[in-house]
Length: 345
Ligand SMILES: NC(=O)c1ccc[n+]([C@@H]2O[C@H](COP(=O)([O-])OP(=O)(O)OC[C@H]3O[C@@H](n4cnc5c(N)ncnc54)[C@H](OP(=O)(O)O)[C@@H]3O)[C@@H](O)[C@H]2O)c1
Image (cartoon, rainbow, N blue to C red; front, top):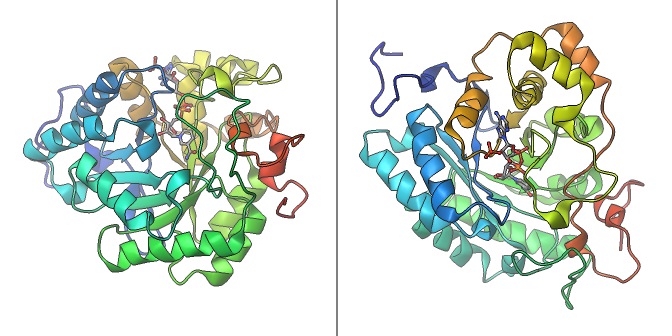
């Protein structure tokens, strides 16, 4: 650290150099807190873009984007302003994701190029295959919506997509590639066949949905777990809500720790995720909230007793179930997640 205050930092911001980074298999380092940019179909793109810009002013250097969020051109305007303000490109971490209707061999490179143009950067630090299914559904659609050409996971098809992801690395358009919403049986096949391995798997992770087996699996293979919906996605769209869902930030264990520390329960969820070794990508468009979320990374850790207590409240409570990606009538969303260790067909 130079000791100089970096350009563009708000007086109450967190020094970006103080925010820990996690090493990827390539040696590159990803800041452990990123700002999510999915407005859950309800937050206007302008508000998300404004949050990106101001989040950089409070010290964020990592932004989790995706073409399907529909706001990459808005976010891109903010990224350009951040870079013009003197923040160096190599100090920013920008992730984007390939949407399900762009898995075709001819679609991957153009889709990435479109995101690059929208985000106004020459390269992405990380590009993920958003879901392992090529099943399109229109943005904002109802949970009962099914695409007529929906298919199960077909490994040969996924590998064709993955080969194009590898081409993106070879062509220098992206620095790293990774997966999202994968399961152990699918990752087994990908790791067997990939020429360029995924450096990260983005997956739903919060205290009520800890996925210990999948986290252990990826960590043992040098793949960084990036936890999405780390607060339990209290603002998620209606289509992602079911009666059995539970609320992490109302859990008595989380609330008691939050009261003791004088923070919002959301911050306790993030601190737990960080201490467990995850990268977290909370969404917020409220300055006080996203600043508190970044401060979670530099504040004193939770106690061992806190961590044990939170380990005990896992409910296996998946919130983002993916119903719209099902391919047959009469299926359950559980078929998307290979719960019996086999890839459902
Ligand atoms: N790969 C995938 O398939 C996938 C799926 C889902 C999400 N994601 C990514 O993960 C990101 C985060 O997930 P998410 O948006 O579902 O859920 P989340 O980050 O768990 O929750 C976001 C919600 O929490 C509130 N919040 C944030 N910080 C808070 C604080 N300190 N105090 C009180 N409330 C707070 C926000 O409201 P306010 O704005 O009012 O603060 C917002 O409603 C997304 O934006 C997206 O980038 C990826």
